[in-house]
Amino acid sequence: MTPRELANSIRATLRNAGHQALLAGGCVRDLLLGREPIDYDVATDATPDQVMQLFPDSVAVGAQFGVVQVWREDRKVEVATFRADTSYSDGRHPDSVIYTQSPREDVQRRDFTINGLLMRPETGEVLDFVGGQQDLRAGVIRAIGQPDQRFSEDRLRLMRAVRFAARFHFAIEPETSAAIWRHANKIRSVSAERLRDELTKILTEGAARRGFELLDETGLLVEVLPEVTAMKGVQQPPQYHPEGDVWTHTLMMIEGLEAGCSATLAWGVLLHDVGKPPTFRSATETGDRIRFNNHVDVGVRMAEEICRRYRFSNEETAQILALIANHMRFKDVERMRASTLKRFVRLPQFGEHMALHRLDCLSSHRRLDAYEFVGRLLEGTPPEGINPPKLLTGNDLQKMGYQPGPLFREILRSLEDAQLEGEIQTREQAREHVKNRFREKGATRPQGQGETADKGTRS
Image (cartoon, rainbow, N blue to C red; front, side, top):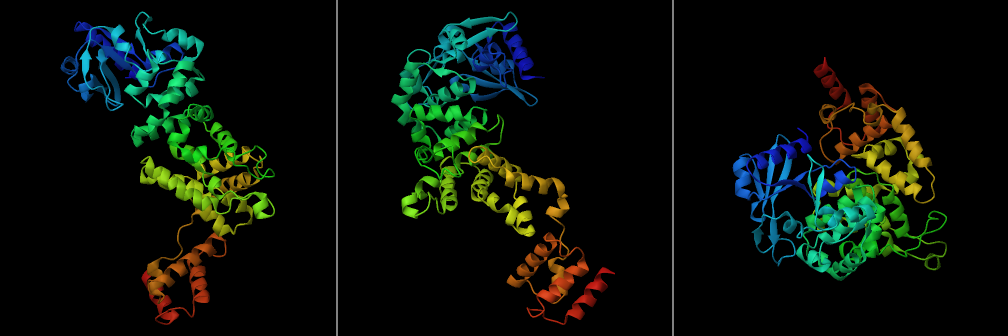
């Protein structure tokens, strides 16, 4: 059952029980824009208790605010009771909820006119009490009623205005935009998780550059990511970065992010040069050209703080930091030893490293030599050539007379290097490598004894 079929089934059940039931909000907006909605919401005059009686397997995710989720297998639709909200002391939730029978009254509490539309899909009739259809046609994001009141009710709406404007290539209506400026400093009271998710959506919906330009223009960027705002005006050596300052370079890179890209790639791209502003040194200071000495290490530390601030998972944080830590290594790939290069391309989710490097090049000097070099290696080398099975194990080394410890690790590393370099391919060659390289280091019995024992074990 598709989300649309589930929504229509829920509406039919509600209507058969004598209740009003309309499609509401973003799904109506998307249908009118010719887009297939991802989620469907239903608005009704049935109370949460009545909804839950009709749908015993429903989940009261926000019943105190009139919201119930109805599930069928892995599909869900949110069913919200018509309501009129009162004050919002915490800048997110209404202090109390008054249920109403009036869809006209219900939409007055919603955020933007394009999200305040209701529909009877069986007839195509749209109930528009807020001018949402006109704003859809005009390409405008406009707060319903008084913008200051809407943003005071839920401060995340400040970010949502930007995201919708970027996603749909709309303009933010002047009074709404001015209200965002007035309330921008209040965005810091929104939970880290909600801000992180909204920023991630801006980065991954295919219009990241426009989104971040709007965040900057509305005064929100300096509140949520001052480290990114600091990139503005930080010049770069023109021989490598003819495009301009760090801010321009970063905007060009996030502009290249495809809709639906991973959150870790998007944040890695955004923050890959976050260490440049604090490490900037002018040509006058360095005596030759603009430099950003140690900007990678500084950037990793700054990005780690940002990831902690926005409560990314440990796995997401590790990948974002790895993208930043390794993005400058591509300049050396053609000079790397084979073992070093193969270990490099074995990094987890290496495709994201490749994608970041490609965007980095296309947003600066446009030379893709290193990218293409690595691509040829990956295309022409079988997986076992990149990550071959071990020829000897720790048990094998113990049978040869070596004891676990620092030397153990050194021997195994040397073996892997030789294998990756193509110097050894067999277990016998691996043993000879150990005997020749580590003859004087730590064997506790004659090599022959170890060999005999090992051969006996394997026969």
